[in-house]
Every structure is written in C-alpha cells, then in structure tokens.
Length: 628
Image (cartoon, rainbow, N blue to C red; front, side, top):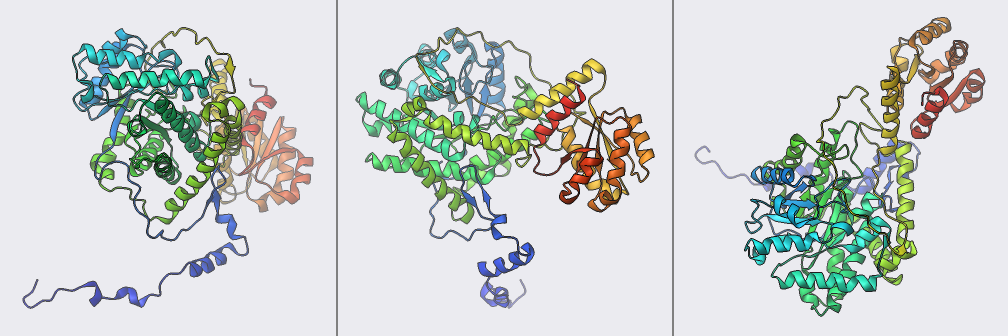
C-alpha cells in the first residue's frame, strides 16, 4: 500500500445503492412477460407427494441449522462388502480400508439390500471376512441382514469376544430390523406382539456384552426401492423407529438408554433438493418424537445408501454421476455414514475398478471439495427450508395415520401403507414410460454400441428356504426404474445375436437439414431407447427417391422427420410412397393435430412426440415388425 493510503471500506463504495432492491413482484412481472399469457402455475413443479416446488424462493429468515454430525466432522465412508466368497470379500475389505474407506457395510445374503448376492451367514464366513480387520481401531461396521441371516449379529458379536476385543471399543451398527424384512418379504411367521420380545431380548443381550450400538435399524430404503415417495419413506422410518423404542422400553430399558439404540437407514438419489430436504426433515421429525417421549433430543444417526432404483444396466457409467449427486446431497444434509452403490451393481458383483470409484466418489467430495466443513449449508435457503417444512407436515400426518392403524406392522397387514406406495410407483412408472422422468442412457440418449461392462463372476450363497409365514400381506418389492426400457434393449440384443442385425427404423427426412435435424435427433433417441436402430438419411423432396432409400435400408418401419411447414407440403405424399414401398408401419415425429386425419388417411399410423407413451410405442414396434 502506498504511503498515506487509507483503508477503503464497503461503505466508501456504495455501488449497490445505484441499483433498486430486487423485489419478488418485479421478478413476477418479468416472468409474466415471458409466459405471454400462460399461467404462472406452468412453472410450478410437484413432487410425487403433491408438494409444490416453486421456481423461486425467498430467503428463509431466522432458521437455525439442522444439526446432525458434529461441526466439521466427516461422514463415515462405508464400503459395501457382499461377495459370497468370504476370502474374496476379506481381500476387498482390506483393500477398501487401505485406500480410504473408514467403514464396512457387511451385506449378508437375503438382506434387504443384498440384491441377489451377499455374505454367507455363518460363523466361519464372518471370521474369514473380518480377518485382519480391527473393529476396535476406529473402523465402523454396519450389518445388513434379513430373515435367513438374522444370526449374523450374534456371530459378529461372538467373533469380537473370541478375539479378546473390548466390545465398547467397537463401532458396530447391528442392523436388527424385522419390520423392514416383513415389508420386503410380504409375510411373517409371527405377530408383532411375538416379534417384539425377541428383538428387545437381542438388543439387551448385545448391550449386556458391552456393545454401544446402535442395534435396531429403521430402514426407509425398502420404501424407496419399491418406488415410494419421500413422505412415505419418512413416515415408515418414524413408525418403525417408534415401534422399536416401545419394544425396548417394554423390556425394561429406560427411554434414555433406548434413545441411542435405534438408527435410521435412508436412500439418497439424484434429486439433490428433495434428498437434502428429506434428510433434514427426518432429524426434525425424530426430535419431535423424542420430545413427545419426554426426552432431550439427540441427533439421530442416519446411514445413507445411494439409491438402488436409480441404477441402470445400460450406460452404467452415468450411474457415477447419479451417485455423486446423491452423495453430495446426503453429505450436505448431515448423513453420518454413506455407502455408494458401485455403478455396475445392477449388472452383477462390481470389480475392483467399480469399487474404487465408489470409494473415491466420497473421498473427492470430502477431501477436495471439503463438503463436511460447513454444518447444514442449506439452513436459510428458502427452497430447501420450504421443502423440509412441507415434508415434515405431510410425513407427520401419514405417521399419525399409521399409528391410528395400530403401528407399522398393523399398517402392513391392512395394506394401508402398500397401497400408498403402489399408487406412487404407478405414477412414477407412467412418467418414466412417457420420458417425463428422464433416465439418461436408458430412456434418453441411449448408446446401442456401448461395450460390455465387466463384473465379477460368483455364485450366490444358497440359503435354506425362508419357510413363509401365516401372516401374509403385499410385499414392498424393489424395482429399478430403467428395467422396462432395458427389457426392450435385451430383446434387441437377442435379435442381433440370432439374426445378425437389430430391428431398424428408417428416418425418412424431408426437406433440408434445417427442417429435419431437431426431430431426427428426437426420433433417434426415442427409438434407440428401445433397441430399435435408427437408420438416418439425407433430406428428400422426391417421394420416389425416398421410397428407394427406404427399401435399401432394410428397415420394416419408417418415421417421417421434418418441420410442420414441410409436413404440410410433403408428408402425405411421402407416407403414401413409404406404404407403397412395403413399409409395415409409418410414424411421424411431431403432433400436427389439425392434419392428423389427413396424415392417417395417407398411411401415417402413429405419432411420436414429447410426452407420448414411449414405452408402449416401442413395445408396439416389436409386435408390428414380428421381430420377437
């Protein structure tokens, strides 16, 4: 600084004073000008719970942070251990811990999140998997078990005891969760009154050995995996959590002690704002339950998994982006532990590369982006605060409805809860079919020439039959949203292998590239999402040349692509020429409502456009071309 220079403060440069303060009303006037008479509600989105998502929010004032993890504390980087061969699983676990993971999620066969694989639930397998792993060295361990692997908790506890390790020095979440298992399996051999004492006895036994827990898991993933909404996932977690608190208290444990014996599992997906709001809402709702119990609220431990239902088998590398966004949202919202599902999990057991990417997704966000350095950065953000509040209100109302029905188990027996999840899943599947909810690489922007993805070869553990149960109800079966489109891609692959060529659609482009390029791009993505290879062409003005090019393409169907103006001049003649050339079915990219009757009379049998049921159209293509 030069001699005699003075310090300049913001007050000395009142640049902002030259501009008027921004007002919401001023913004609305500008928006109305762009909408040109269209209703403002066109810009208002809705969640699957019917919650409004406004295009703009004002700052939420006087909002305190929703505290989860201690300030500046990183979340636990959990790595999924699910290889059926215990020796291989052990090698994977040691590699993960040596390369940045701070915890292991031991997924046992038959568990809610096993997805076809998982560890063998035997004492010998547990000992092999944990060989050279030191549970008392600050490593977090989480158990994910099911009805056929429920003894894994005891087996892990006995392993710790035989190794002479102090249970109090271990950080083990035992994952006892019979309610979630009942929901997934759709039956139970026992009533809840019969289950409660067994759960409480198991928890008291583990606590008596000196383990600090938590012991019981309330797992919202089962709702998310089944296609449920944020409100439904929240309400299920609350209902199951309260049921476990009551069971523990009935066994003679004080609520103050029981408070730390229950934790939550949540799914995090690629919807950043709803995911953040959902995690924040859970903390607020659980604190409300603690207060109702006469307890001083303590932060609930929340373990997050990136969502199963958002994984795709096709173009699986996009799953890396989805997982990154989900991890970002869960981390910022205060998750205590996060498990990233490897990007190839929907195809089989992930190899070393996929596992490394899953680890590094978290390491980059923690070590390079420093996401954990700020506690609840969403505090005061109008949009997320608004969504958090709305989720709290709606989830609390559904939780009360479940309680009035007799609790979580009774609500499952009555089908009350499953009917709500089924309705949401149906709406979600309809939007996937119409491509309103986009799945990049599956329903949009497919790659028919992608290389085969490498996964490990392993034989799943053979479990003894579950045995069913006398108490049966509708199951919350897990789904993947991309599966219907992937089924069509599988058909295409089978045809390619059997006949040497995929089903084809000829893109009958009319006019110049300026006329047809936009709709060609749309049509190519539309058809190839179902495995129908789009054969491109130059623009045509002569119907005879168009017909000749169609014949030469070897395609059985065609799709006219151009602008509405060109359609008015050429579409009818082009459709007739294609039909005369042997086209079994002609589509038109667009929706010229006034000309539809004339176009259909000329041979156009279907229209493809944004918002159309793409899945039904693609299924119809296979039926019409008799390629299946």
